[in-house]
Image 1 (cartoon, helix red, strand yellow):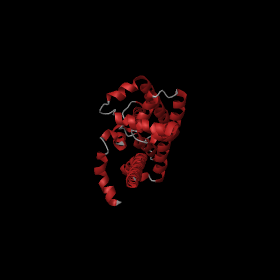
Image 2: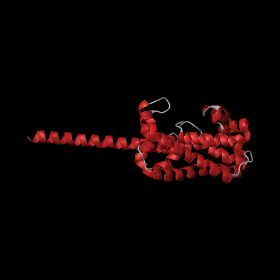
Image 3: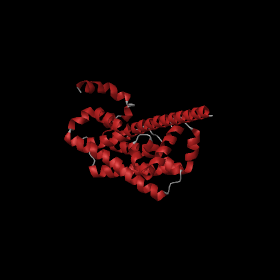
Image 4: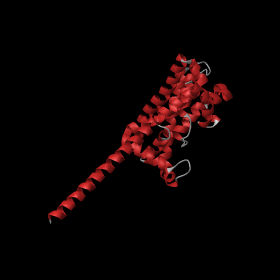
Length: 242
C-alpha cells in the first residue's frame, strides 16, 4: 500500500492533462472550481467530448465540500450538477435528432463509428435502462444520448429515463465523495487513489461485457465444431452403409 501511495504522483499525470485533475483545478481556480465542474459535466453529457473527467469531478466536488475547500451548499451543488447532467443529455439528444446520421457516417478521430456502434448495441440490449446504466460507463454516457436522438426515441420517454440517470449518477457520486470526505478527510491528499478506483469501477461493465461476449463466442465456436463433427460422422456412416 505504501508503494502504491509513493507511485501515485507518477501515475496521476498519466491519467490525463492537468486540466483533468480536480486538485489542479481547485488550486488554480479556487471557488470557481465548482462551476468549472458543472460546465465539464454538461459538455461530457451532451457535446460529444467523451474523454472528460465527469466521474472524478463529481466525486471531488463532494469531497471538497466535506473538507471545507469548496464553499457551496451540498444540496444546491447536487441540484445544479443533476440539472447540468440532464440538460447536457437533452442537448446531445437534439444533436442526434438533427445531425446524428452525418456524424456517424463521417467517422472522425474523436467521434468514431465504433463508439456509435458499441453504444447502439448497448442501447438495443438494455432499452430504457441504458439511459440509466450508461451514465456509469465512460464514453457510452456521451454517445447514448446521440444514439437515442438518431433513433428518434420518444422525447417524453427519453427525458424521463435520462432524468433518472442524471440524478443517480450526479447525486450518487457527489454524495459518495461527501460522505467519504467526512469519514476520511485525508483523501484530499490521496485523491488519485479515489480517482483510480472510480475509473476501475466505471469500466467494470465494459470488462464484464467483453468477457461475456468472449465466452459466448467460444461456446458458439464449440457448438459449431461439434455440429460439424456430427455431420461429418453422419456422412461417413452413410457412406459406409451404402
